[in-house]
Amino acid sequence: MADLRKVEMYRAIIRQLLGQYATYKPSHGEIEVHPIFDDEHNHYQVVGIGWDQQKRVYGCSIHLEIKNEKIWIQLNNTEWDIAQALVEENISKDDIVIGFHPPSLRQYSGYAVA
Image 1 (tube, rainbow, N blue to C red):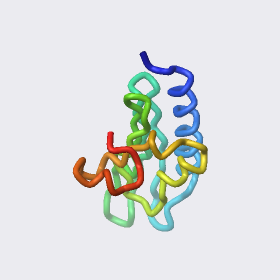
Image 2: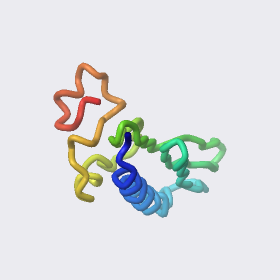
Image 3: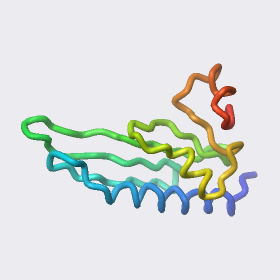
């Protein structure tokens, strides 16, 4: 059975970090940055929507997921080291998985493999 207190703590930390990140406005274009929080399914994203001159911008820049009482970084298309930010919030490296790394390489990341 999942430790619900731990999962709720992780949810709160993720919401705080991604909410803060979403307040930063891109340096160019008319792009809105939205945090998307799905506590029911434990998915958390930051999505950019708008226009940069004549080019449509729409995409996910960060996607975190809580599964098996660990935080999986499924996508990080930013320069921000979200894993380090989680560690600075006192989340153990053993509870962070760099999900976008191939399973065979995760053992070298310094974080959990799964």
